[in-house]
Picture 1: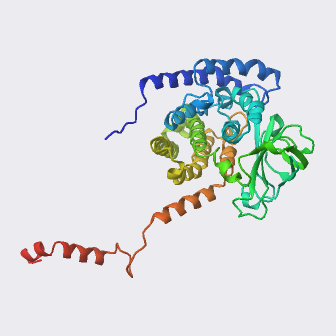
Picture 2: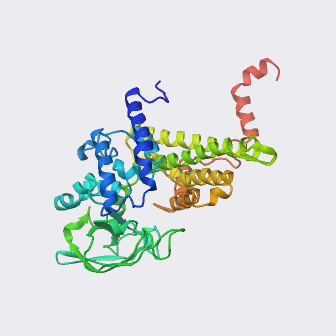
Picture 3: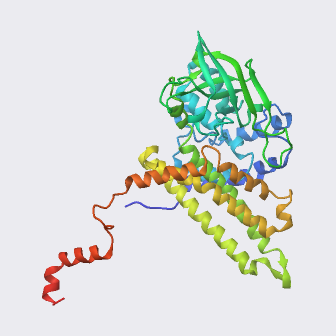
Length: 431
């Protein structure tokens, strides 16, 4: 039997380096006026690439990639531990080359892209020289691809794309878009979609407006509303086969959700640490520390328990992926992680906000942003309710129905079975 909660000393040294690097060199970038994905920003161009080079020199660049793409081939457990630290800062993922959606888009290109697409986009993406967008969600369909209506029709040697996409995040900074479009309208609903690469600046690709989140000014934000009007791209820009959009999309999920969960865990841990510092620093009625108040103690204890439970569950799922190398086998676990993740961050940030009082709701602390992020997490890559339903269906499919009128576990049945099994002993003792 092999069972351990320890990290091997050699990898722990790397984690210690990452923690110090994140704290001392990466986190300060979070407070400077540039967006991590805006490669054209001269301030970012001066400050971020040198840090990225330090990560590359340490052999920690884009660690989610397999050896065939230049990564170290870490398993999911090591990646989870690494991402827990990286996720503590806004710029961490971009400095370590693990940022979404580029990480998933790179895997799609690596698996399904033509040699020309790989040369044009994959290597620059892996090098951190460009960024990309996953253009899937639609205004009328949300994230449910079975309701998508954006179409791509083959006209000679070109795909012609028409329709509108919503929340195509970070599109303003992207060099290319991976677009999900209906190419087989008469096929089964899960075989109608295909993935197609559209380079930025292609004629007919229109930014209707920039959509932000709460706190952004109206008309500003990083989630563009796009319109594709007779957008023409070569037929070789198809990723995978026609009608394989669902299959291609799954390439960017699975392990990616483990990494995202642990990055969120790192963020929630920061909220918890702030909560602790505030509780032992601030005095309230009766000149008593907040930490002495039972309601505050309850919030601290509840948060710690939730964080520890979630962290262990994510790491266990990562261990299963490493052990079985089969994402289908842990599909329910991954759905559960996706459903739990928003709640864990929301609760930690909300309680931290409450303990900080008026300072907590001010724009001088990040709790409001993190609470909003938790709702974003509950919608991105499928709503929480969808993942709960997926998990429930998996669990129900594994359940065995009763073959008797009453449930097989009612006490009269159990007593009868036990008496039959031990009839001779009962008779010897006159029972």
